Image (cartoon, rainbow, N blue to C red; front, side, top):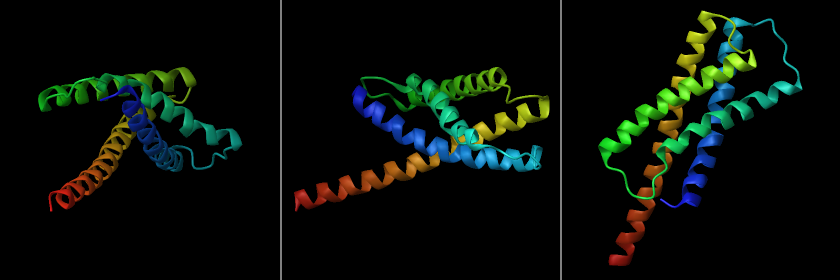
Length: 140
C-alpha cells in the first residue's frame, strides 16, 4: 500500500472514530455526569481524541501485502497500543478520575474500535463489489 493510500484510509477512519467518540461521550456523560453542562470547547474533544486514536494506526503501515496471520497480530498489537495511548492521554488530560470511569473508558474505546472495524468492513465490501462488477463488465 502506498503511503498516500494509507493516509487516505486513516483519514476516513478518523471521521468514523470521531462519530464513535461523539456517541461514547454522550453515553458516558449521561451515565456519570448527567447534570454537567458543556461549553463550546467540548466540541473539540471528539476531534482531539480522534486524532490521538489514529496515531497508533501506523502499526498497520506496510509497503507489501500482509498475510492474514501478520494482519491479525498487528490488529491485536494495534488494539493494545490504542488502549494504552488513549488511557494515558485520558489521565494526562484529566478525563479519567476514578477506576469506574477508567474501566468504562476502556470498554467504550473497545466498542468504538469494533464500530470502526464494522463500518470500514462495510465500506471495503462495497468497494470490492463495485470492482468485481467492473471486472465482469470488462470480461464480457
